[in-house]
Image (cartoon, rainbow, N blue to C red; front, side):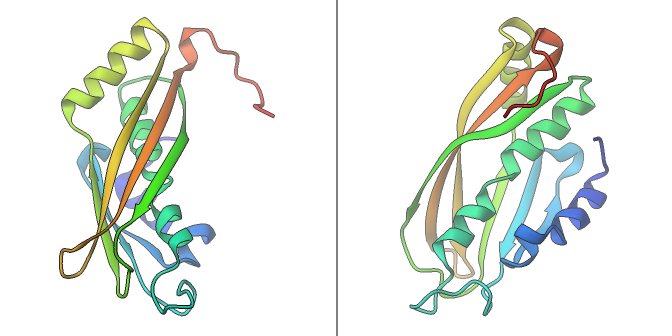
Amino acid sequence: MKVSANTLKWMLRFYPPLFFQRIWVQKFEKDFRGVNVKINKSIFNINYNKSIFGGTIFAASDPFYALLFDQILRIKGFKTRVWLKSANIQYLKPGKGNLYFKISISETEIAEAVKALETVGKFVKSYPIEIYNKEGMLCALVNNEVYIRNLFYGEQNTIAY
């Protein structure tokens, strides 16, 4: 569904898998070209070492490239299926306090996806996410592989399982 950036921000703020892990969408950029996310350290997401649980950090990175591409392509008139195909993470420093990341999708990256969707019918590419603490120290590196299928290109709209 097409929604405004503000509506999607508030929907995700109270979406239980993000809300209970204290993952907070701060802002979506105009036309969904980017997002700012904060991972709040709390009693709900700390581990034995009093740092943010690695699963929370990984979960925070999960939905955003797919959501951004989905909304951008809907605005452009595409009917797509978008999902995170694979991901990996490297934990570099413990998240002893709140963590932050920003994702931006450039016009070149959008054009690359559009071209593939119009010619091949699908687009698969990996995108990095750098997660920082308040002091600007890099705490985690995530690599998300996004899969986009153009449903107008011939895929039947069926249940995947």
